[in-house]
Image (tube, rainbow, N blue to C red; front, top):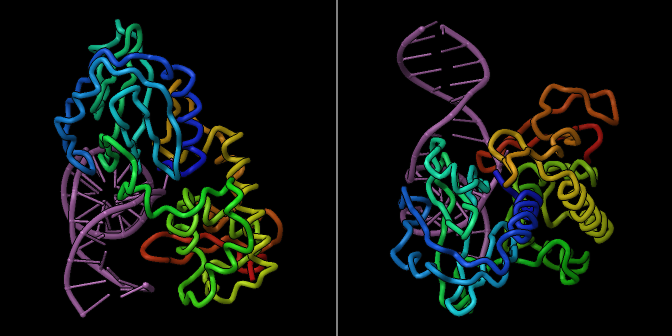
Length: 271
DNA sequence: CCTAGACCCTGTACGC
DNA sequence: TGCGTACAGGGTCTAG
């Protein structure tokens, strides 16, 4: 579900409430998420949250004196704030409650691909270590992308989705970005010119920023902490548009597969 | 190193 | 209406 823009939207909403709050206690109703939740999570009782950040599609909660919580929402994870009087009204797949003084942050995840892990330190963290640059960082520029793309024989679309190359891009935005930059998804990475890398970097920043400003994309499971949905799906040009007319020409959106994931494209606009 | 495939889950949409 | 199948925004791990 959530790619960089969705996680960023969630982050901004969590930040508003969580920073400076103390976790009264944690209630776990299901421990078998993507990685089992260990007993260490109970160390978070009475801990003060001093910061929350995002890296790629991960959320990182920094505690005052007791390490970090690394969170990933998988395909279908979502948070919502509820009032204390609602604590006994559960939805299906409500797995975890973070209980605060006057509110509860509830985690729901039908497919259970999300995870919560506690780390004393994030140095050499196995998840964060291998990530490439953030799309909005200075390190992410066309020189980086061009250099990185040399001698790679695979197709561009699945390459854009590799977090070790660029952090945070998933299936929806990989498709949208390639349409925006008019690059055919099945082109080989090594065939990219410097000019095209420049265009790609520009398109990545543009599409992701627009999506964040729209509150993310809701196809099915993405729900904001206030229960509302994102509306970038109204701006999607190719994702989920198979058979629909291209927004720029008169041909129709087609699909192909890369590593079992659907790729959407316009064969006339994208070369 | 690289790539393809299996796997972790539930919900839904669709064809018969 | 029911059943079987394919597919869905994630990533990790393995075998070759």
